[in-house]
Image 1 (cartoon, rainbow, N blue to C red):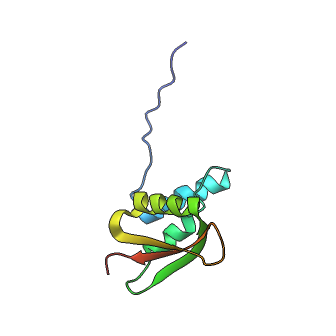
Image 2: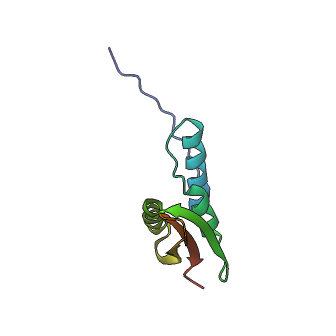
Length: 101
């Protein structure tokens, strides 16, 4: 049996990296694929202006996870600092800062 050959070309378009990331995240979440629980923080960090900060509270393991995730996605554009929450064992304040400002 002969293979079917198509003479049509593949359609594509060029888009910004941010738009492509959003498209991929929406596609994955819509079909049950894995999207990082830190994705919302990543999107906010991309838009973070000098002099502004993002604050959240996480467990010790999650602090390491968000550091690795943001470093992988944004490199040295942001700085992640943390401090233990007084009176709450295992909980940390996490601050994300714009490192370029």
